[in-house]
Image (cartoon, rainbow, N blue to C red; front, side, top):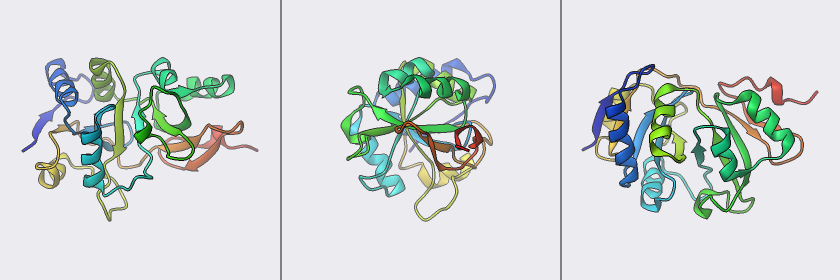
Length: 208
């Protein structure tokens, strides 16, 4: 049965953040809030935890996971960022955007797109997520908490507990954080393209 932490969305309790980070380091799967919606997360290098998330969401091998990064300097460890892309990333992080970039060798191959060797990365603008990433000291492997057959992410932590208490190790209740996924921007090519419009304003990435 999973643990259930109620963490303040603006002033996260460090004691609970530390316990959450310990659960992740020990191979746990966690539900946590972000600046766009709740997400499932686990340690970047833990294959068993990633496989558990695939089963929860009924995802196939082609699903693109996202690395949740603390800041742009951490993001640049895991992706190749050219000068033009860097300027855009600097202007719009942190925020509700996921950027598709060419992965570096630091990214486990199973998390990349199998053919294009790309990875989704983002820097969240949410105090709980930032505190958790700071304590972890590395990115969090992440995917939006949308259950199989659903169109939108789950929004109520108590519903999450009813559904997932036997499938995850921790649920972090950070209150209502939204139900609109991030805007996804492909930054692999020279000209950025909008793959999915979501919470982040796509206008800065649209050409013409």
